[in-house]
Image (cartoon, rainbow, N blue to C red; front, side, top):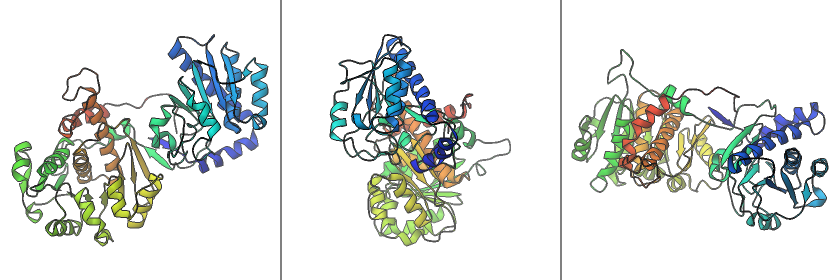
Length: 488
């Protein structure tokens, strides 16, 4: 599991080190790591280090000092280093002396550097780039290595509300910060550089393949179809029968022991999934261990009555799509439930539930709603946020938006529901389902849609995504923990 620490916790962890170490020692640790990453990037992109050109865009804080010290180290390896000083009077003095002493120069942005280092603002910065910085950044055409975060991106929320740096690589000192997963597309590849911080519990965590693979339910020697988890699905309508097919399919391919379907799309469901037990009435569905309710079922009075009956049970319930629309007008239905409730909204559905959209702080919004209503919230997005009522937050960064296609949420609901039925806690079930769901979507896209294997990303559909869920599960189950330096 990978951990992410907010600015306040990182600052608190830095304080005792700064007090105990000689002045500048912590900065030089960071600078050494930054210089190493820059050298590796030069080697990978140009085939060498000596004789290459690096430009540093330097702000007034310690971030600028990190870059200046790193520039001095690169200069000693034969790199031509130019520092663009955005606020010369407030430039880190010791770092500037080190760079000049090593033969680095101060000047405007070179015409064609091999690499640019973004050291404009650090984790204490907020808001977009100021005009002078934005003007320099607009001239950059080379790959950018960001120091701790891309400048102009909020370190705790990943929000961008104006000009900001687009990095190819971001070097994270001492801890990974929320920005590194919430704005992963802005950060590029994240390289972790340890500097000796003693960190507390993280603000966010993300499951890796081994975490998911180790916990994915597989039948043991004494298991049967009932002990593996029986998932109940209430979905679909005359208008949207496909939602039933997809959500049931999500539960089936996620290896549920049995799936019981209740709704008006029995014929369509059985035509695609003959192993499913189907009825038109949830009361007649038989025993289940968790319910999925909502995808495509409509929002009329009959649908509301069904939602009420399902939520009145003492079973874990996942509510999605139309179920969320109904729930937004009847939040009392989730008050004081004796069993877990998992809500899986996209931003628009969240706005209906909460009375306002998630805004730039998606983690805060999801966590606040989860805490207030004692539910688990899976807030969809490229960085999907899963917030438990106890304050724990998991994030799944999809690495792309291949699952952003009609019906993929129905598949995800079925997958997460099957894990709930297998006995997993709602936050873990949601995060594991999101992890495999995004991997399956990427596999489908990069296989040319229908398994063409040409290696090129192509638009895919939710039906194709379903076909890649089991290969994705096999992938995560075969993952092994990589040796090496532990990352926070």
